[in-house]
Length: 100
Image (cartoon, rainbow, N blue to C red; front, side, top):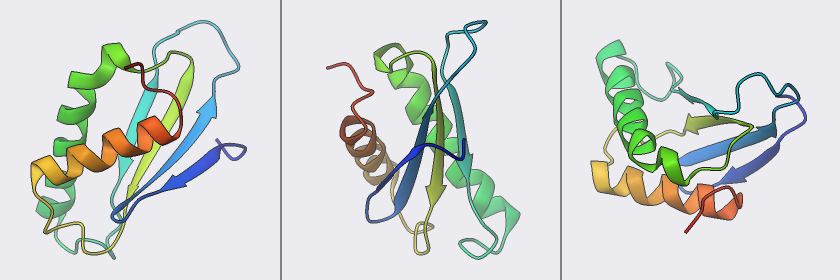
């Protein structure tokens, strides 16, 4: 994952890396929320859950054989679901891994 490309938006960063093995073609996706971003575990987990719900709906439109790591930035705890969704779609399009 160290040799990936990084894309930024206002509240999220995305690191994308191509998979080298062909065993499982499905994309691997993770969400990272630092304790500096949200002190309480409840808030960190809420952001991660929202991210996974959004990506699950987009999964059939995401290219295969990639690793994706989304990193939430400070002030992300106040975001609404739709705002997170817009930023995730923006980052995936910018990384050119989202089918239209």
